[in-house]
Image (cartoon, rainbow, N blue to C red):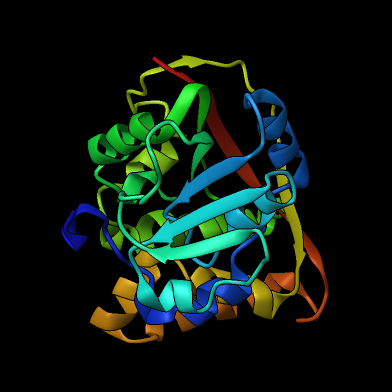
Length: 250
């Protein structure tokens, strides 16, 4: 499978991605482990720096985590039960060998049909497919309005078209699964102002804006947020709407 089957917007800032992207709640991986037929093997496709793979490894005996970006994989956090591989939607796994296949904040960058075909090949009968994403974060109303304007207006034209799938919570993606009624999960973290701005800088649209316009737009946003944040090292609760779809493949 060619690299073109997976849109890579993050190799150029893999270290920043590792440092500032939020971590998924442990209860999500507990839920997936309970729903999977067993916990011998999971495949995490589009793993990035391993944000989901590390969580899966707390519940699964073995996790194979793939990403097309050599830079992302090189910076992935090591774990004794995680095997990282540079690959697009080719897992390299045996037929019917996995009990769970996941794609965390990655499905919108993939060739979805290729991913689903490989997931069907490697999942054992009764195996679980789970995909999830998180959409625009919330902090408090005065800051949220600045984030919303920056997201939709200032850098709106720089978002790749696939981003709309995240805004829709993946609801428009046709998945061949017997869909579970997944309970809500909270993705929340406490951030200082530098941490929040570091996270914003990992957005694919921000990176494209930086390449086209330089830092003026991002710096102006940072100044406006700092006026409402208060002391830069004040921790504020940042909540990310988490959208999870899961079920046995048909």
